[in-house]
Picture 1 (cartoon, helix red, strand yellow):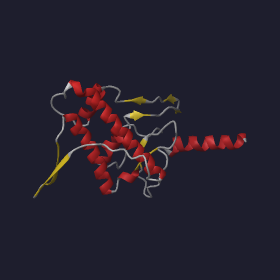
Picture 2: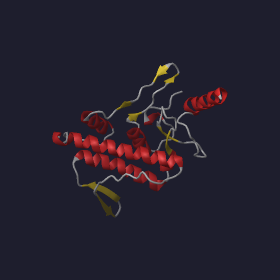
Picture 3: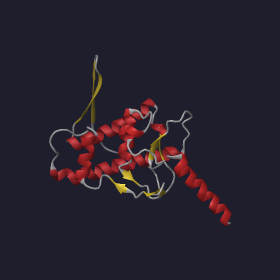
Picture 4: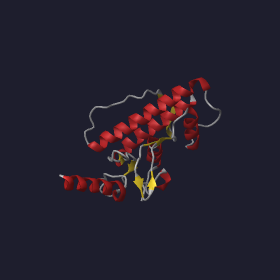
Amino acid sequence: MLPPTRAEEVEGLPVGIALLHHFANTEDRRGFVAHGRRLTGHDALATPVDLERWLREHDLLVGEAPDTKAHQGHLTRARELRTALRAALRQDAEGDGQGGEAAVGYSFHVTLTAGHGAHLTIAADPVDTALAHIVMSALTATVNGTWHRLRVCPAPDCQWVFYDNSRPGKAKWCSPQLCGNRAKTQAYRRRRST
């Protein structure tokens, strides 16, 4: 069975994590055959139009389209954010938590109101505001303790970002039946050939 492609297909996936899961997997690195189907990696954020569509589909961008002169810069910032998220998740899974830090620059203003709690305001254009909400989802996941359950599959030809909803929270593979078995088979073949 393939790992779920859409966040909605993952059982028990918290809302903020669903956004991070889907955003990180806009870079699909899977490149193997599973159940007779060839998976080929692709980038769902290949063009500025793809980015705008993705943000609208996730209710992060509403209203008029942003300034067309800024489109390529927005795409670059989105990809940099995605790369930083994936790198942080990979390091978290490896357990070192050292190095590889990537700073993403956003200016946040938080207003605290009696009866309404905190409200986030970002003084930026609509796309940067949308990307800042993805950053805030990562911060929220860190604070509420769900970040450590978001992982990158260690299979070099997969690297799918998945949510570990197992009770112990120690899952290694996006799919033990798929990538886990492939890794065991490869290790077995290496041992037999020596």
